[in-house]
Length: 341
Length: 222
Ligand SMILES: Nc1ncnc2c1ncn2[C@@H]1O[C@H](COP(=O)(O)OP(=O)(O)O)[C@@H](O)[C@H]1O
Ligand SMILES: [Mg+2]
Image 1 (cartoon, rainbow over the protein chains, first blue to last red):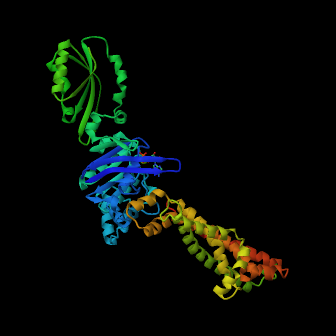
Image 2 (tube, chains in turn purple, orange):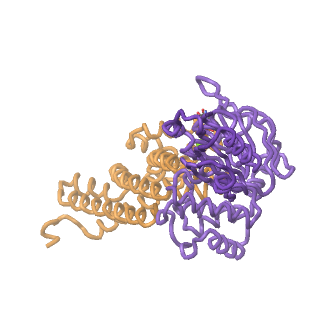
């Protein structure tokens, strides 16, 4: 478990003070993938670099497995860092070393014996799917392969936590998904806690269990990914959720479907978790004397289950419509009436 | 044919002069490499925002480097006469040229070394820190290998400047091809000896350039 309390970082530049991280408190559970999302300049990189003290906190405390990072001497910190893996947006591999030697580097730093290094490196190369590439130099690898080396290197000393600073932001969408899949499989195989920061909601949706939204150095919203997706509270969070589900901001396009007939209603449905698998629409069409017209729909899988959004138009007698809506609410689906009859 | 074009050249003497030039160059290149890398490292590491940030050490080192770079080489030799006499025991012969040669080129090379280190990706140094590397590990396993092509090509440039300096030192008594060109050639009106020395110096420069380029290219895996 990682416990962060009242963490602050103030950069003092010649012209001004920048409060890059402003009183952040978070608890990150063992074995979870915790995402931090925010726009550029929100303080995400500063936040993640405070965790292994690549930046010195101005105040506050960080505990990893009950050990207070913030109180450690330079030497204690150095040893602790061997147990905190980190991967970077631009991979930061040594171009002068082969894949094998890049992955061996943290083991050399930790003083591991040569024979053990060999065994461990080959195991890691296999884990990240780079078998056969061990003698290549980074310049001979694609972006995705470079990040795989970065991941293998970060895992070399069996870390307690993996920090990812925009690990997929320099990659194309397909490669991003491959790397995210790799992170999930590592999280499950090794029960490794992962903290990642990103500006892409897609990354959060695809692999995170919990998320914190950062703005101006502060955490403005925090919770289970599914909850945050379905019920975003802050304006920033809503914008991020929209980024992922273009339907949400196409609502005005639905206006043309919304007519003035008083026997029709336009409704937005939120399906969460197991409800996404339910054939609710055919149920109501059979059960009630209504016509269902499907306008738009989408479904988004997350680590904690899926959630879907569906826009439908219901036609029928007024009291039947009311009953139908009531029935859908009973079924555990969130119903939002966009246009009243 | 050779004796036709170069009637006054004594091959044995020219060979000795060539050897002396080579000795001077090779030993000074080694000295320059060691001293230059140490000074360059000190400049890099004590600079603002670096590993051992220290304004006083940086300031003093920078002043020493700049002062030695500012002194014209021919004057530096004269200035260092007492020091050379103390260190080598003589002020004549190729060995006596070494202190001045190294003092003249090491500060120049130190600046090239500093620039080479500054060009190492900050992210890679940061990655090493995030793995818990000690300072000496960062120096020997990150800074030096990652900047090696620039260190080598910088050394090539320095070595070629150094060959020029050996000739200057030769004129005032340090032996070598510069000395031969001046004493046996210029002073005795044997212009063919001057030309022969020039050709050999050009060949030596080309060899150094060729070897330097070859090594820099071979180790650059970027
Ligand atoms: N070394 C620094 N010195 C001064 N200001 C900084 C420094 N690093 C970051 N900042 C400032 O702190 C804020 C947060 O930056 P950063 O953590 O990089 O944000 P993000 O990663 O979310 O884009 C920005 O306003 C940035 O300009
Ligand atoms: Mg950033």
